Image (cartoon, rainbow over all chains, first blue to last red; front, top):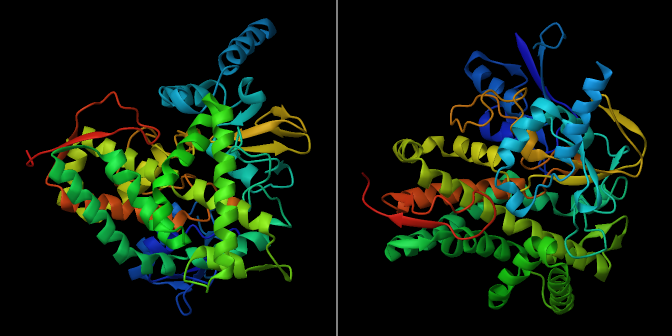
Amino acid sequence: MTRVRVTGMCQGHARCIALAPDTFDFDDEGYAVVRPGCEVVTEERAAAVQRAVLNCPEAAIVLDAEGGDPVD
Amino acid sequence: MTDVRNEDDAAIGERTRTFDYHDHRLDGIFDEYRWLHERCPVGRSEELGGFAFLAKLDDIFAAEQDPETFSVAPSMLLPPFATDDPLIPIDIDPPAHGPYRKILLPAFTPRRIADLTPGMRDTARELAQACVDAGTADVAATFCLPFPLIVFSRLCGFPEEDWPRFGRWLHDIIYERLTDPPRARASGDELRAYFDELLRRKAQEPRREDLISVLLDAEVEGRGLTHAELISYCYLLFLAGLDTAAWSIRSGLRYLGLHPEAQAQLRDDPSLIPAAAEEVLRTMSPVQGMARTCVRDTVVRGQEIRAGERVVLLFGAGNRDPEAFEDPDEIRFDREKNRHLAFGGGIHRCLGSNLGRRELVVALEEFLATTPWFRCTDPEQPWFGVGPLTLEFTERP
């Protein structure tokens, strides 16, 4: 099981919102947030989340194994 | 051994001494970037008053995350946009930077840009239809330039009757600042005088749904923006928002006009257009480099950079860094990993990036949907800038 989070590195490029809209939303200033309830990456959303990770210019999206260690 | 290396360094220095990333120098620059990646990822040029440059994506990224070492003063623009004053917010360092930037962040969120999209589509379709009807057209003048001008001027609240005056100001300030600085300066003065008058007038009028109204009512640290700050912000919006979008649309259409297989692919599967737009932005970014000033001695990739040196972040080179991108010089619509920095990064990430991306995607979508087929009749027309791009419209082969 993998969890996803957006770190303080986010600068609002909105690539994740374009590539994985089911998982990411944005706040009033355009910074990305994980949609409430979407922190655990389900199988259906995994490929899109992975694309968001690979296309975030700030490397601001982090995947953690359920135990808490970051996953590559 | 040492002698050989010194000789090598001298030869490298001799080649980078005249490096520049503007105007006609962009002609062969992709070959130059390839060479920089192989031989000189951190180097120095004596052009434009002298500057160090960073070519690797990682180094550019790291510099952008470190405003305490790499300041944006006196300007990100090298040479500056026909003014000695810092432009708000791009030429401001933290902590003053944040409050200025926050003013317009809400106006450029993905949702606000989505709201503008239907109007954008109508404009793009209308302009594209006029191109097809002409049979052959300079689409830079009839599509690439007017489309973002109309979209962005409406968003900002620049009155329509003034639009015909904008082209010369843009050209002089952005392109003539290298070749004819007095002319650029004269147009810069005219543009500031224009905003001086427009802002005074709009301050007296009822507020509208436009960015100028947002700026007029904005507060930074408990006070309104001064008249000089308002002029600076508008001047920046004008210069940042119009030319860059036109450039990216033009470079995308030129690519498709020269690569029939790519054009056919996007016509057959328009869902590829957003990915294609990312590749256009990555490989032909309208902003090939932005400057910083090193404010404390540092070392990048083993090269010392001293306090006081100007340092250019070569986004165009970083976006073709073979360590960051597989087949970096290839435009691939199926590229899975694409962390390009066409809009920069860190706290100065292009404020209008959501708008710029949407304008490019909508422009490509509507241009392809409205035209049956097109080809570039003059492959010698350069990939860069906003000069003529002649397309001939035909039936699909």
